Amino acid sequence: MGRATRHLRWVAVAWAWTFVGASSPGCVEINGGAVEVSWAIFARDGRAITDCKCADPSIAFVRLNLVSDPDGASQPCAGLDECRFACDRKTGATPFLVPPGQYLMSLVPVDASGNDVPIGASATSIDSPAPQSRAVVRGQPTELEAFMLEANCATSCDKGSFSPCAGG
Image (cartoon, rainbow, N blue to C red; front, side, top):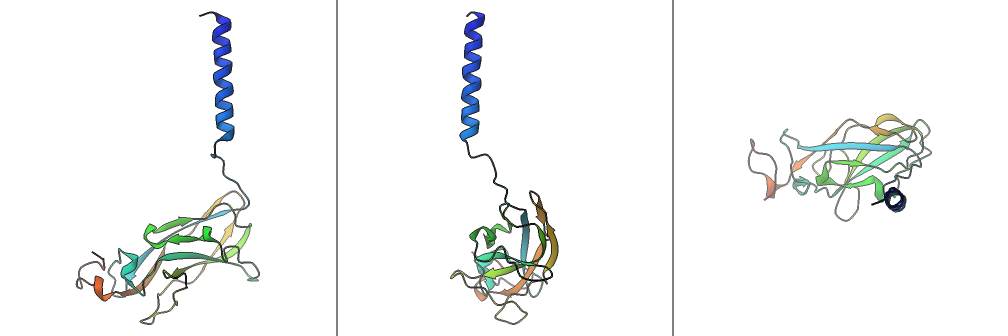
């Protein structure tokens, strides 16, 4: 194979990789900052709840709630599926869509019907920590400390005082 043929082959391969790389969906659109959050669910007696359906009331999703601080005028996650995560994942991250600024950040448990589960320490609610104040910077992820959600253990999952509250 001559030098010119090798050069043409190299040019063709380089052009093909350039075309494939430019057309592949590997790029991330950045329209703001991202928020990363994790959570764990515990029974009110301190046992781990390993299956979100075993929380009473049951939790299907966890929604990230962002409220601009101090004015409360902006809620960039309101109504966005990108801010709602399957509960059993125990972690979630938004795309880079949150406008830069200071926010009060909290988690809201959501039931299978898409309704918010009441927050509080009653028998029919989930206890969630107070919102955390964090800054969001364009192009950067903001990590929240893990949220500990507290709930009653569903009767169908209660295996005794020394066992985790788990299904199955």
